[in-house]
Image (cartoon, rainbow, N blue to C red; front, side, top):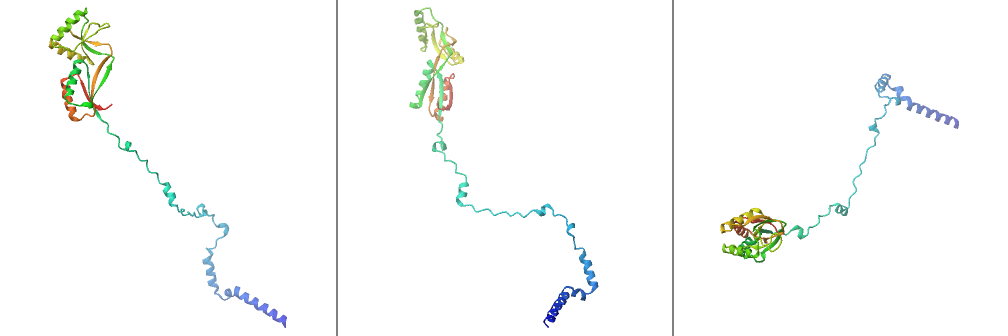
Length: 248
């Protein structure tokens, strides 16, 4: 009896499996199955007919990591350092003072300029500079024969009111009488013209080939009022030069 039951169970299982596998096909409409086969046939693709994937399809998606948080101390360190602070002397440089230069003088011209400037009572604000030149021009009388002739000529000059003179005591110009040395020939010619008006007849202008010294006046930190007054003096001594410039 047991063998019959075993074989019976095996047969029942086989029938049940067959029904589950092919039973739908046995009961379904044959025309519907044919139509379904035609509709789905175009969707069947053989593996050997599948085209190779495009290169861009092979690229993996790129994941951009979020930036790591930066510490506050790191951000502060990356900021540019503040510009160095200038010293007070560089930030506020002292104003350069302006000086008035008037010159160059010698002889009677120097005396006239000194007298005019004395009326301004400048005190220590007024200074002088000595300027040397290798050559210049002078108004002179040619060397005389002897000392007696020199004394007679000096007497004649004093009688004419000429008191600015100098007797050369040595060298090739010994016993010549200098009536003034000047930086420019024009200034020398102007001085000679004034001597002619006083009655001097034998003086002349010549180039002086020797070291000559002249005086230049310097007025420190001169304001507009002082400059205006000195320009008025300069008009009376037209051979002089007047300029405003930075103090040396």
